[in-house]
Every structure is written in C-alpha cells, then in structure tokens.
Length: 198
Image (cartoon, rainbow, N blue to C red):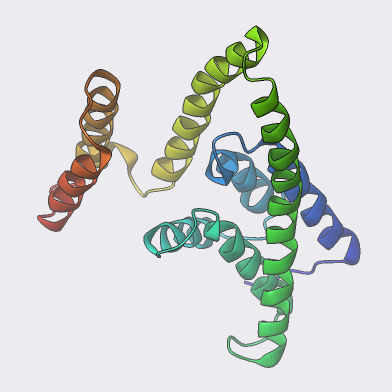
C-alpha cells in the first residue's frame, strides 16, 4: 500500500496522538478505537490487516503495552515511503512514523501523570480525589471493552468466534466475582488456544 503524506498530514498525525495521549485513561490501548478510526477508516493510511497485525504483534511481544503505537507509526511510515521494504528510504520513513506516534502518545501523558500523581499524593485524603479515583474505574472498563470490540469485529466472521467471546465473558465474571489471580486465567486461555478451542 502506498500513500502520500504531506507535512500537514505528519503534523496532524502528531497532534492526533498528542490528544489521544491525554485521553488514554487505562493505558494507550484504551484509545485503540479512535486510532482505528483515524488511521484506517478516515485517512486510509493503514489497511485493516495492518492495523490488526500491528496490535497483535505488539501485544504478543515482550515489553511495554504501548509498543503497538510504535508499530502503527512504523507501518504508516512504510506506506508513506512508497519504497520497497528493506530499503533505506522505507527505514527512514518507518522510523519517522514511529517517532511521531511515540512522541505524541508518550510526552503529554507522561508529563500529566507526573504532575497529577505528585499533587494527588499530597492531597490523597480529599473527598473528591477519592471519588475521582473510584469513578474512573467504569470509564477504563468501557474503553477496554470498546478496544476488544474493534479488534474482534475486524475478524472475517465475528459470529464464528463464539468460543472466544464465551471465554472473554467468563473471564470478566471470574475477575469481577473472585480473587483468582489473573495469571491463572491467562494460562487457561493459553491452553484453550493451544488446543485450538478458541
């Protein structure tokens, strides 16, 4: 896929990720639906398969959860280069895309988190600080559910993957109603995947 990105497009990519950074309550993955809207649906800078593969690969790789942002930027850069994969031009554009998206998503949220956490720690006994912390939990859950929906509906036939949906619902109920450690659920999911059940 080849796309043509002007300087204004690069700036728009940066400013969009800057704004998403401030909305990333619960981590950058919670803003995945809007990234999908901008990169795939609205601007057509990535194909659906490139978007899904970037997220899946980054989530499977060891390291921080935010790696998918780097891969999305890398693929936008590769598409903008118009050069064959592996060429120095493709590498340069890929690195530029990765840098733009990572700076955009990391700088505002890191700065805000540092300032806000210091302030909230100093004022942790205030009633509205405690209420804010408790009120953010449903927002984070809704954003993560929207992310799961976007990733699952990108599949060829979402209805054919009912075992995956069943495992997701059962896992959510188990996390909600018990004190079972999440690693047990991850292990059970890995076994179900290994045997081809999900």
